[in-house]
Length: 403
Image (cartoon, rainbow, N blue to C red; front, side, top):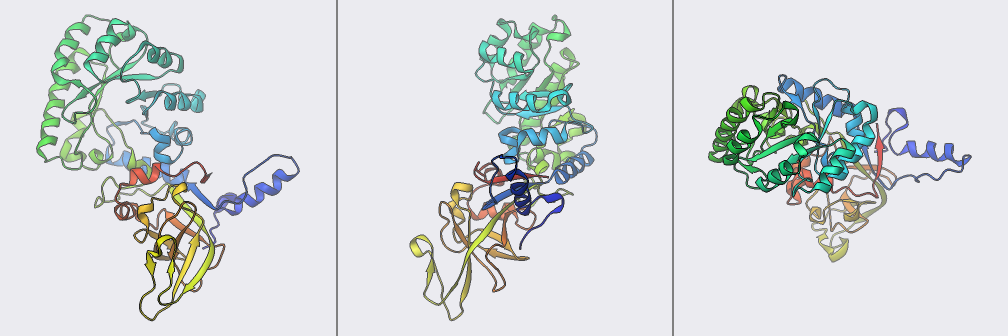
């Protein structure tokens, strides 16, 4: 389908921008061969839908990894003025600095929490956080000792991450008592702004590990909540939010950290959508069409060959693994062309891929590869991965259109 969207977005919008820039001498991108379009309306709608599920918790939207491939600065600016925003979650110091710059005055009062990039702790990271207004996360006992001895509790905002059973990053829960003893006599300004952990099996609150993590977090809150009355406690991401009643989030936490669901993808394959919609739509252009007869194949290695007596129409698309399509989608992936579902035929190559199509498909049509008509969990299953990887794999040569 030759996609047209309101407000001059979509591929046709590039043509008007080319004409407008011709007289000014500015260099702009040509009409794209593959593009990703991002919907602010969908992002805001998803945020509101999540708020309806957990109305009593504040929000830390996770915008790490470029907002899961959607554009971190764009997502932060869209969400910054929404009710209930406590702050934003990033993975690295560099991401945090980028978001702080992008928000400008809109970011006042919003924390930017660096969830993993401050481990292992160094004074250099402390100076970076201080310069860019970032909240450090202390994620090991050694980090805490260095952070405390360096006087950083008095210099920058910070949160304490505890290991309740996932066994990646986190201070041992057993160390909470000693931290409480050291800090209880300190002025409240030097206390952590937050205390949190992370769930390994959030979609399975009845699992043994989940029960253990919940019990440890309850004990942690009981011990540190008295010493740090101003600290915000948080534990759950998208899957935990979807199972919030079984986790008891209303009484257990002050904040939630939506990630995948914020971008319109259910947190596990069989999860109900609960009013969320995909924010990203990835489309590639049809650049050639072939009618293959019995015995003919397409692409490297001839991995798809027409059998039987019927002819097969094949559309060649201008997208490949250099654009972020996993090669594992070869003969497995799904697509949407001219209002109909179809599948990948043949091997995904660096710059091109091929899908089945109808006789009505024409060169210049646009085929949806990620979006509302393509189940991203099914796409991920077909390529042996998860939606997170598909979203964050869309490469820089894919042109972006922000609506």
